Length: 336
Image (cartoon, rainbow, N blue to C red; front, side, top):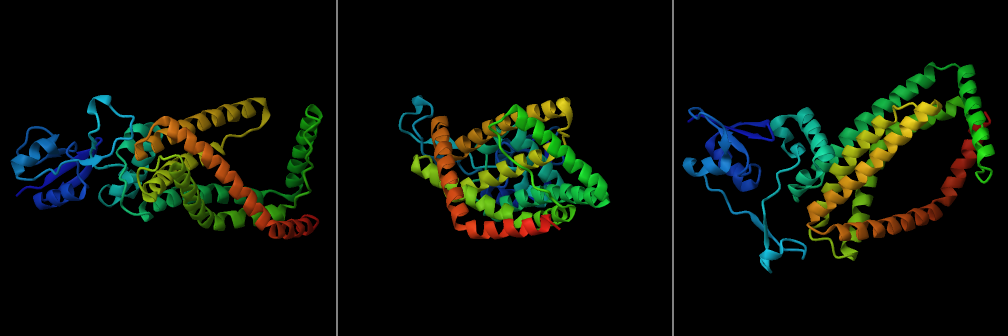
């Protein structure tokens, strides 16, 4: 029997035997809206249309409770929603790692509504965590190594010249803003090299901790405002796919040289566009994944900000002895 070819979003998912397609439908891997083709057909047709002809049963969609903000014509009946099919990263075993990364990146950045409304709410924590760590660690390490290489190739005299230029710019800014008080310490070239190395090696650990901590605070905020319709796993998956994709964009923005009036203006405009873009996508992602209204998302975001600030202050107080010790050690290194 000829294999069945499956495609989604103009991307091939591969060719499968009929029994594999049946199992894929039951597991949620394939959707009724996917396109299907096998030898003898004149054109691609939806899997939902062809499945009965191939004696493959399509299970009914899952029922999700209404949050009070759906179509009023539904009354008190539950709203029907299909099982999630996004993102493409979940199908990396079929379509390959590189295509899965780029398809997921494009979907999260440019189609957040469609992507997170079709998000797979289950499937484990490791898959989305691997996406964000792989994407961000690769870019962060690449740019970190480039920065380190540039610093190593820079002579001591060139380094001192750049530090003096920064001091001149800071002094000029302080004259324009007398209330801004900041003195830049004399930083040694060796000290920055060690800082870059430490940042490169510790980044994966920091990224893992940040994802779990951020998702935990966000889910607690959603629970406090009555917006956690789905478990922590869903919130964690949203956080990983959203932050992983947008952090990759932020790393690329670091390439914009903020030198001169034109450079600073370009960097400022790009940063404002990025923040607005990220804020919009975040609201959409949480709203769609948790099936709640925008006002609950905004309220949860406000609670999240307060909780995050509280934890930051608490951690700063707890780690203050270590911070003071590191500052003293940095002062010794800086004077070397």
